[in-house]
Structure formats: C-alpha cells, structure tokens
Amino acid sequence: DVKVTQSSRYLVKRTGEKVFLECVQDMDHENMFWYRQDPGLGLRLIYFSYDVKMKEKGDIPEGYSVSREKKERFSLILESASTNQTSMYLCASSRLAGGTEQFFGPGTRLTVL
Amino acid sequence: GIQVEQSPPDLILQEGANSTLRCNFSDSVNNLQWFHQNPWGQLINLFYIPSGTKQNGRLSATTVATERYSLLYISSSQTTDSGVYFCAVVYTGNQFYFGTGTSLTVIP
Picture 1 (cartoon, rainbow over the protein chains, first blue to last red):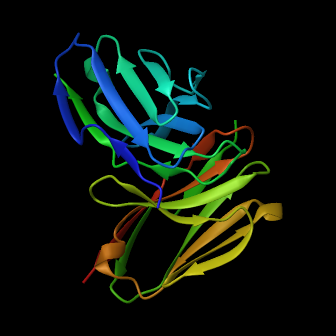
Picture 2 (picture 1 turned 60 degrees about the vertical axis):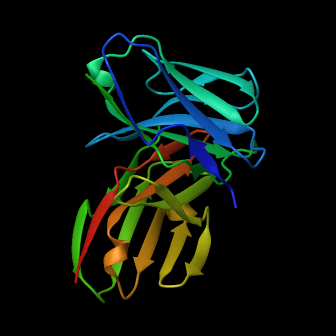
C-alpha cells in the first residue's frame, strides 16, 4: 500500500516564526503536492513538484515556499507564519503520468497564534 | 479553470438508507477520483474512475465522461460512512481540482 506520512498531526506556532512541514512517501512517486483546506473553500493547491528540485506554483503560493531535495520528501515552508495561515495542510503523491491516482497523508492542523 | 460542482452539499440519512452523490465538471477530464474525508481529516481513496463503473462493497461509482458527471452510490449506509465526500478531477497536466464536497451524516 502507498503510504504518505506527515511530520506532525497538530502544530502550534507564533506569528513570525519559520515553520517547516514535512511529507514523506514510500512508493517512489514522482509527483508530490501540498494543499491547504479551509472551511467553505475546499482544498486548494499551494505547490507541487514533479521531480527532485523541480516545483510549480499552485493556486495559492503566496507566503509559502517548498523544497524537494530527495524524491521521497517534499517540504512546505512558511517563511514568516501569519494568523491567516492557520489551516489544515495536506500532502499527496502520485505517479508522473498525467492524472494518475493521488494518495494523501493524514494532514497537519497548524494554528498560528 | 475547470469547475467541479458536487451535490447535495449536505445529506442526513438514517442508518440503512441508500444515497447518491453527484459530481459535475465543466470540461473533459483525464482522471476522476472520489475520496472520503473521515472526522480526523484523513482523505481516503474510494475510487479512481475516469470512466465506467466500479464497485467496492457497499459503494459503487459511475463516471460518464462524455456527459461530464460522476455518481457515487452508498447502499445500506452505516454511521462510519459519515464524513465529507470529495470528487477531484484532472483535465490538464497533473493538477487535481476538487469539488467543495458533500457532508454526509448517518444517524443510528
């Protein structure tokens, strides 16, 4: 079975802190994705990566950056956390071929005070 | 971009009842998935179904790509079926576009 893990289930940070969210997948998938989920807004894509060191902006990249140094690991970085970044963050992975099945991690609930 | 609409937005069922959830999309798609988000936030894959019909136990799904819709059927619902159901489509590249979900509550 595909397994996608995220470093924390719950995280509380203060405004202005630098925050790292880590995601690891064990199925050698080329694509990895970061989404945020907010009530009434559904899932929105922040960034995705289709290969090591490659990244593409999604719909809401402002205030975020990403890093993919190894194929199995995709990190989301909040350079200076703000209260409007309080949200549920979901990581996913899939094979490279367009539109293949996507698998999600358990999510990280981030609260920025 | 593509529009993905799900209906109904909310659904309350008595345990044992059947239901049909619908996903409409505004353009041709390369892929479609149905997910169940449990109360802890985990998105669980139900079906990978760009076209045709699939069944898995009490759940089945049908996608009619030419008419731009997909249906998810839940039979003999159980309280553990409660949660939010999402459909997601790919119409270009690798990006998935999600609907806003159907929130299902199954009452004992």
